[in-house]
Length: 414
Figure 1 (tube, rainbow, N blue to C red):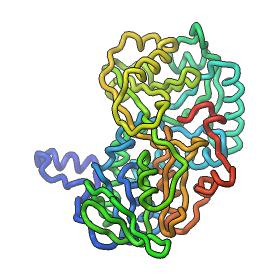
Figure 2 (cartoon, one colour; figure 1 turned 60 degrees about the horizontal axis):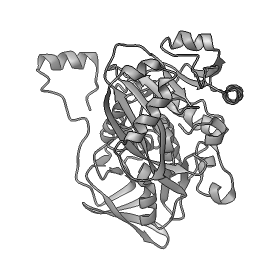
Figure 3 (cartoon, one colour; figure 1 turned 180 degrees about the vertical axis):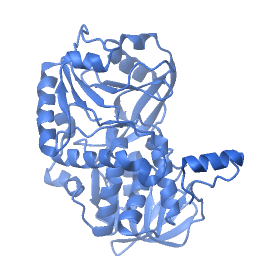
Figure 4 (cartoon, rainbow, N blue to C red; figure 1 turned 120 degrees about the vertical axis):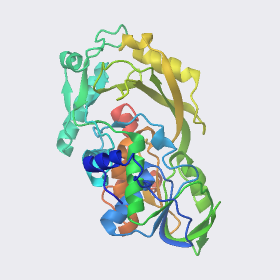
């Protein structure tokens, strides 16, 4: 694999860009792999990458029923933060945030990581108390955050209205090393690095069954033939329940749509990410000038990837009071993704009742920010059978009552 560099760009410019290689290979599936990972999104590709880089396991196939990065990885709003209250959450999200900082160098691929800062508005006294508590917890966890007052909020976000008629801004939880990254580039960078290590990325290949013998996985049946494996990783986000059923066990998750939209491009007006949890809306500005807007997940189970009018109405109405300029913008496009929600709104990174099968799911509305940390933990779990980052996220915790209730703790699931 040729390295990308300024010299490579100059060289190819002289060749009319005729010398670029394909970023990753598209091989036919082999009969047998040491590890098969189902799901070529960010989490699945990250798992494969860290299996190879950290543990030298490269006889790996990453199988995707559609196209690479075509699920939630390409449908999120790119927010990265680690200011969670619970210790297990802070640990894995901070690991992830730190990996994002060096990802472009590690992958030799520009993922456009932008540590522009994430601000979570406190618009009630309850939120003020909650965020002060989180800031103290983050200090103990080694996560750099602080609570800022309204004048500093206004200085960081000049377009904000501090004196909303229903919910004035009383302060904010501020993490200055949080930010955004280009979601597609994260998947493409991991795919390129995995392919360079000799792993097979197989697109348009749907897993139709999981084969077992004596309670242990031996392979999968796919739309492109049978593939044997010693270990199987299921990393398919909103379709986790379907895949788990094919493997012979059930998951305590619900699949719902999470929608987002972007406005027409405008001149730069906001260089941070703002989340308003009381009204449940969040917004940032992309490099192209679009205002990227999202809100809460749909309140009913579904597998749609389309937008709906009620989401536009509820989310934009939530943000108009705090950002009056939103009312004058036209919507450019809208979409949805399928997210998998656990009862405590925390993920599952775990062994399963089927020996050799591992599951990574339940990230709900916070999956993109966890991509590298999730892949790191999942790779360690599959390679060694144990990972400190994953030990709190076992499937057994729901039976044993060891919940990691981040939605109640943080006041928002994002």
